[in-house]
Amino acid sequence: MSESAASDNTDISQPWDQDNQAWWDWYVSLADNAGEDPRILPAPPIPDLELPDDPAIVRELCAPYRVSEAQRTFFRNNGFIKLKQVFSPGVLLRLRRELVRLLDIEFGVDPDTDARNRFLSLEMIWQDNPLLRAYVLSPRLAQISAELLGVGAVRLYHDNVLAKQPACGRTPWHFDDHHFPFDTHNVVTAWVPAQAIPLEMGPLAFAYPLDVHRLVDAVSFEKSGTGYDRSVADIFARNNVAIDETPFDIGDVSFHHNLSFHTAASNRTDRSRIVLANTYYEDGARIIDSPTLVSGDWQKFMPGVGPGEVAASPLNPVCWPVEIER
Ligand SMILES: O=C(O)CCC(=O)C(=O)O
Ligand SMILES: [Fe+2]
View 1 (cartoon, protein in one colour):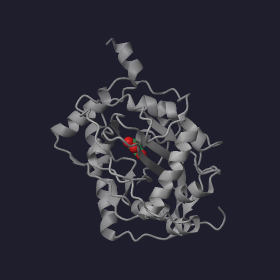
View 2 (cartoon, rainbow, N blue to C red; view 1 turned 90 degrees about the vertical axis):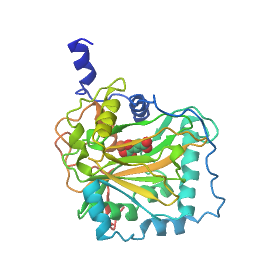
View 3 (tube, protein in one colour; view 1 turned 135 degrees about the horizontal axis):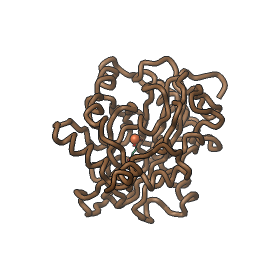
View 4 (tube, helix red, strand yellow; view 1 turned 120 degrees about the horizontal axis):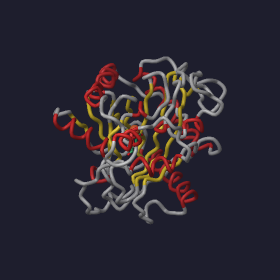
């Protein structure tokens, strides 16, 4: 590659000018799938439960969850944590049913039966759907996020429904600081699986401890091809970096810091891996002066907020502590 072609491939100074779905289609194209096993296995059945009614769901989404000092220390050191029984199976299966309905409306596919190998994404699902609003602005998720970060108040950046369809490939290695246009590192994503995720479905996997990002800080991001993903994987392997790649039981929720390096394997099951990922950040944070291509559709998540300004549009409510007005 000539020098200018190489620098074109690493120039991310232009803003993203397409939608969030196009962003994800592009982003998963950057993953190296050479080592992935192509066999498709049957997914575990979705439990046949009686689902709770909406008031019971809202009560659970609002109730506090006890985070121990040991868990806070683990998160601070490692940049991620997987917590057990954050929600009951019924609350998650009700979420899944609603997300399947929305994905069907948006993409015209039943994400469980029409396998198209894509990473489908929806965002801003909470604004006109009272049930999903309760899941996205969940005081329980926001309280856990604030306690893990050790901050007094958190706002919503955005929600993201992530449906990795059967046979869709890996999510490339990355840390979210690269995507999020914030001037703070007090940013956390609650990744809420709407079904159990066995290894063959591609659970989110985390490199740790938190500061392993320093090993790859000098690797240049490449906006086409799989070079960045391969370089990060090689450096982690050469340095024997620990990776937590473990299944999620129904009810497990992971929380990752914006400096935590993470990836996910391909979905080798016959069911979509549906997750709700909500990102929360410390109240008072500002937008950086120069968001990039990789910051994606950020202005959609913060209308009216410009570079350098305090990130607090009406679409970024304080989710914890709970305000009287919502
Ligand atoms: O769901 C995935 O595979 C990736 C999600 C992710 O990178 C995130 O939520 O930060
Ligand atoms: Fe991520």
